[in-house]
Image (cartoon, one colour):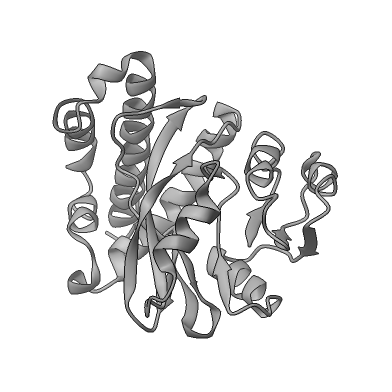
Length: 248
């Protein structure tokens, strides 16, 4: 299952590594670029369209269109390794896990970074025990059962224009601020509790990226990622402070 909305720069690279799959369900939010034209070039794809409300809403709708017992759920900028299906099949054979998490290798214009802040996500799971829930600006799949860790990592390689990234951060920050200020503190992760302070993360993020994670070793790509994370944290912090100021 792959979600799309104006993913022309990414969708072909994603689907190219899914030729082994008998069916790829593409849940599209009425793209206006060449996304669907590219998707139709892959004979193993099925397109369904739904107006976007939330990420969880789109994913749960997609699950309702799937009849197989297992689902591999990917964002359009996730690129699988060449032997992903064989290695995963060997690892999960005979296991009792309900789902499997994958770590990610973050890429900047195709250049892999030595580290990332992007968390591991459950991408492979039994449909019968899965349900998506919104969480801040993102979403998470809840699995009723044990979840294991895949040995392989997935490349996260988003090549949409930088302007699109900036526009997305503004929308994400509003949702994230609402989540941070309304969720009970005991339900927030450690990072989210720091974000809820409204000022701390813009100072911590670049130090953590460059020094703790060592991204200074990755040259311009490392600085690119660090500046992205710094700007994202600045926008979230500003949204949190703005809401607090407007509420008196």
